Length: 381
Ligand code: ATP
Ligand code: MG
Picture: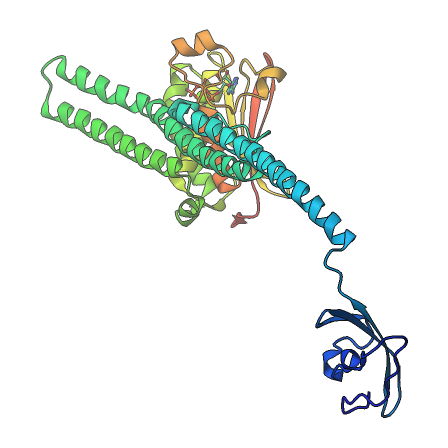
């Protein structure tokens, strides 16, 4: 062939009238370096480029009569006739199994979800043997359960905290009113009683607000409510409030080593935390002993220390005291109306402020609670 696709020389070996057969236009020889087949009449023609110079391309071409059946094709047909139905059957069985497994785990999952109630929020669906897509669904559902459980727990602890914190002021209100009504009193006495009731009522309102605040546990909202406070003045307030209970037990409650310090905090929350710790120190000390509160700088942070010489806490019990409802002496504390929520409220409040607390204690010797106020502090003394 020349470059213009013309066949210029043609030689054929022992084949009559074959010229037509081999006169293929050059462009029909698609892959010049490979063998290609062209059907021409009843022949099969194969071509292969063997040489190419400036004007001429030289091919070897072979032609062969088409045979109606080839052993290779016959064999292939036979194989397909048997193997295709087998493969289809095999695929059907596999698909059926996979679908059954999916549907089965789906049904198990739906069943498990249907059995869940508000009390089972701790439970989680098992995803071990489930297929991947169901496992994704189960994991998503478990994450939802986790969030529901957290909200539910917050609401439950809100009710527990509310009843715990409100009991005392409500008892005071009822007591004041009952005492007031016991006999005729002067207008001034009634005024004093009503004044006390209003004061306690306001305290109840404040506590409810704070508990709602805690139940929301929106840390950003808390941080926004922080203001600059004098920690030393706050401690004075706390001691003044706790003095009434200390007096009943003839406990000497006093402040020592107080330096002026400012902090950023939520006043009511921090007061609640400190008051809970001071109340514990008084409650778990014997009559006539001492409770000392101090505020000092240990170079890295300011520390509020509340130290008593009371009954102390055993090393075993010490690791549980911040848990909700944990009380060391259950029978005694129940009689005294203790719920074991005090320290868990303390911990929550301090966590919000990023203050740390540690409690050291020795049985029969006493307990020391230390709150550390890092970096937020500024010494103005
Ligand atoms: P409340 O909710 O009225 O405060 P509570 O005092 O029992 O009840 P927490 O303040 O959480 O609850 O204290 C948990 C437990 O830790 C107490 O029951 C008590 O046994 C122990 N405890 C706490 N503070 C002291 C202390 N200063 N000395 C000895 N034991 C203490
Ligand atoms: Mg307590």
